[in-house]
Length: 327
Ligand code: TRP
Image (cartoon, rainbow, N blue to C red):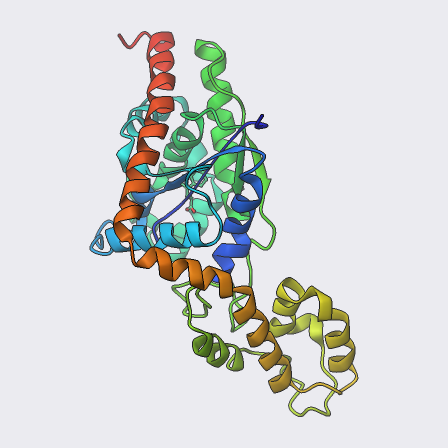
């Protein structure tokens, strides 16, 4: 017996990186035995910032779903689908859009940060400002109890909860108030110490070949005060050490001691990390190569997933229309 339902989504960004893995995917895999999981390719969400540039959406969707499965999401256990295949999300979004004020949406710190980063100020679209309302529809249409997301998404799930409460108090109890399952490491550092992100170009992709992983790791920034092997290092400010902490727990204390006492040079430490990551990703790489040879199967998985998702979404919409007297 499963404990409840999970819904989570990712925008179709193509091949995933280690930050996506430790920030989200890993917990999806961990939670799939205990909960009934729904995982969605958020292609409508991607339009908020990429509506002018849609040519890679299909390719990026397939690449991302291949990574999900290669990382351990089982498409028999978990329901994998594309948001736009379930048009009921759009209907629920419209109804929810009446239950929240523009002022409330404008206070959302994550949206504010995006607007600032993209210099949108006066030019933010209606759809962009309202995407947390769409997200509320994504979550609530499946009556999900738990939403595994990183820190940046917490303000959106707060809006989801507010909309659920408001709906229930106006029309009767239809929706549960979902909880956030906060994924750790949601801001995993890239090779330059900034947050790992495709747009910054500091990623290690899960699908990178062993040689690529090694050459990327060798370029990573370390403690700037440790120039020679015989300089004492400060692991707590070193990106490479942060990776060891995450992927090489058995050796962390030795590495710390050797670095702080000037017995370990950065090159050797990086080579060790590259080996660790290559091993860590070995099984993933094998599975991914198999899946790449049969992309038709990925399409089939998404079609089958949409069928399973649609059944729940349609049932919820019948309830919603009925309590709202929409025929
Ligand atoms: N907004 C999320 C992001 O930008 C993606 C997303 C869309 C999502 N709908 C969701 C995440 C529902 C969790 C639940 O990454």
